[in-house]
Length: 575
Image (cartoon, rainbow, N blue to C red; front, side, top):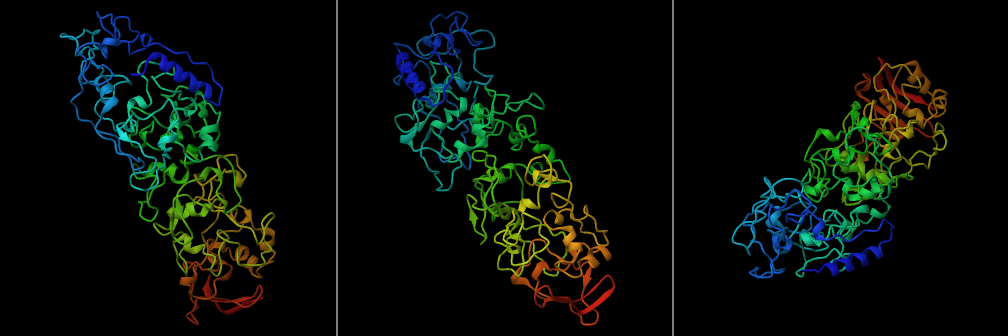
């Protein structure tokens, strides 16, 4: 048993070494804590007659043969122990110091039942057992930080652990393993010293206690580590159990609880995963209101599924779902943009699918994140029936295709006169240049960036009219006109029949152009350059030739054979 003096010296040395300044912490005696169960104790659990303090745990005579002169029997209960796909250990039935702590905290043994006395010590009415309140753990430890497990720095399965454990030799004192290398209650708690609150060995402010063992690689620059945002008092309390005022101070406890967690696996504060994000990202802590975006007609709706997402899921086998953690790693996410195809701050360190269709644990390019759900496993939703139909967006954007929007590589067309500055033929796009909230900064709004929700189908930042016989206007094709000059299009700078088709015939851009790209492996009906891939609900084969065909014939020259709006085109040339 560590002496009070040793505890003081250890805590003092630790405090002196802390890099960030904070108010001095005074050593407290067990006399002043809730672990004083004697008649003089300050808490509701106390004796009505016993004045001795240590006797509730220790005795100099008739003690059990285990240290530290233990004065209680072990609980005989069987426990449910913590489990999680991201937990690298194996929580055994409680043992060692944990077993001693649970002799009170599981509520199965009366607090006054000690070995050294023949009679049970009488406690205040209704408090014979510790069977209520936050200190009551019961026998269900699924919702508590794992204990009685052998600590290793890598997951037992050999897979990636999102917890990112330090090497055992690097654990920051006074946090410690037991002599056998196991994590126990006493790894984080000192039952005699409540200087840091909750009998913690070190402060949990800025998650210094957690970081004694956990070291997510991008945490030092993450927003949840550095933000000084506070709750404005609106909506529901985002931190009902936290002890501090800012996101940075709460750090891990913004989302996690070490005991009695609302969602057992990964110890989330709230039962539903999205609540752990949206209690802050609703404009009452974070500046932008993401929750409002998710209520729009088209959204990445995290409420549509429950208990489906897993941080280590296989993008090629996972069930379709959309949770906040699919796109954001809260241990890595930070503000900041990036030049496509690089990964912006909010999407750092999430899993995805690369351009070859292989799963990657941490994306290198932003499109790999979108491919995770919109490529090989589930594919995109078909909004326009095409001559060459392809739902796999990864295949559509392949730079080997005859044409594609420049997501993975600059476009194939060396001359695009309609492009508005700063766009040019060497520019590259991100999926979020088109798919985004309609009030996001990229579309002139002040809302959150990214594809959270939109009033425009299919989750577009601006209107893109798909219905045939739609009158041309800046609003009808606002999405296209974000990058392409309306004046240039209607002046026929790149195609001599643009004005006739779009304005004269009320033909939508989508009737001729496939915005993603055309797979080179599935081409039928011509060259498919310039994103030509006809909407077959509007365009049909020529009744004269039976063909539906586009052929490029040199610089800004080509030919179409097809039926459209009742007009039969047979080798209709333009140049």
